[in-house]
Length: 303
Image 1 (cartoon, one colour):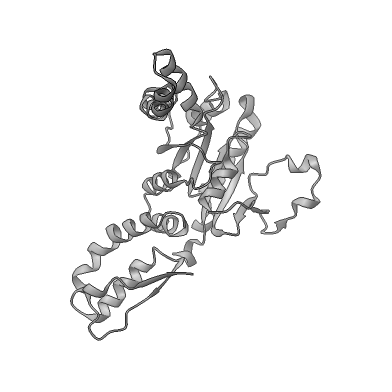
Image 2 (tube, one colour):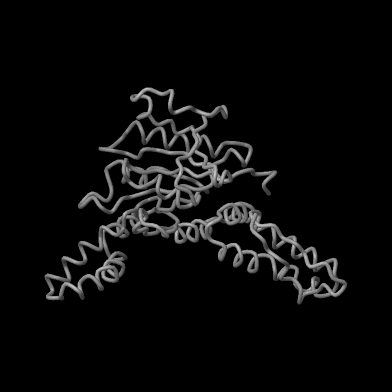
């Protein structure tokens, strides 16, 4: 799969300060900034750019993190104040990538980041246009509500007005925000647009230590209809071992379990097949003349 497709390519759309870089760092398990490459594959030295050049966004540029080069990210700054020009660039980029003959050059997913710390401004006019006019075809769009913890403060104030104590309001704020969000204006809007996203996730406290993007990984994997892309994505991400295990078992084990129970050769084969979902982990088979289904555990050791 990696020889055929190469790396998983994601377009990340969002306004300035939407928390895009932080999310990508969490996905790639790093605090470092990404390396930038132009469309010709040449690395861009940010130190040589002028201040005005650093502020420019080229959606064709590729962002890659050293900690996980299996992902390629393209960045769009979003549609500030309507953003007609940026909207056209994004629409053309999606259309052009869909025409690519090689699957490795195609776009595989879109993460659309909407910050929740801006009151009464969840969707700009340009963002409304995106979901009303931009057909992404087979490329799934996942809306990422970033800075979701900002709604905890709103919920806290509501609870205080209802007479809750300071302690109770603090303890109940998160639950209140999570319970009321599904009926709020954000999801109501997305349900009524012409091109609704395939899914959405809410990510709070991304700046805090030990937070992860497990919900985003789960949601993205669940929107992929192509089995090869699904395996590529699940096996590329390295922050959620549980999803690797689940997909390996659910997708592969039913197909090969009967034959694996019959012969040692087939037993070795199924371990290799399951191991495809764990490319960042070495698999050492238990060499034994009695190797069979009961020994399919193998030994997994991190690189």
